[in-house]
Length: 266
View 1 (cartoon, rainbow, N blue to C red):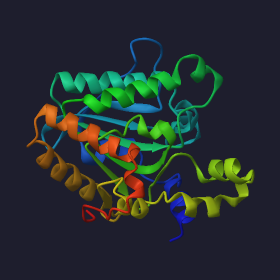
View 2: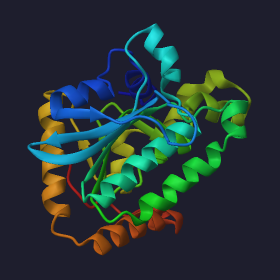
View 3: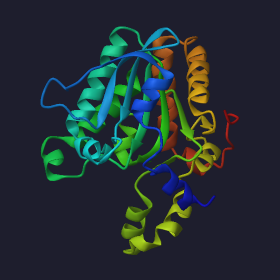
View 4: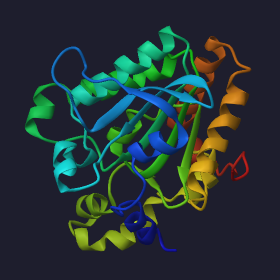
């Protein structure tokens, strides 16, 4: 498949949503709402659940399943309240020593004037800083679109995986083409240049594995169980240090080294 085909597949309205993972991978989900400062943001969905009998905190972007839900959830584009809610849940998970599982599927944070006025950049940057130092296991799965800081605000994790038809990038191919060539119609070319597919990012070492989509929920469960087994061997300080160094290495030019992938596909 071409890169643009992966992009279009990632945007398919019938792809499994965060609510589908809650129903098929976890049990006894209890939703938690609000950031305790402003209002409820439906585009971030999260709470406490059981994973194979173990309490975990699960958080994800929510796009909705129909037009009405799409509007309510702002098409999966959170405002600052959504990221503050996510941070509240993550800090609560750390307090009670619960692993954090996050699911990423967003075209980006909401870019509107209201979001800017109420601190969207501060909310996202606050998540990045806080997630770097969390002393519990953090596992992220990119299930559809993973665009911009809106995706990264839930994705500073010890282990990051992508579904085979997911994409993960600094912005959309249309946005990339508009900025670089002032022509959004060149999105196919942009998608190839951006190296945003799961295989591209696995080869670069940005993600830790690719999850095939046949038998999806069983595969996702197996990946989470395997990652938790490995991360449970580490202390809180080791988890935080590993996560910090993992993401710091990207900033220090890791992608330009040509280093081959360090892990096999899941």
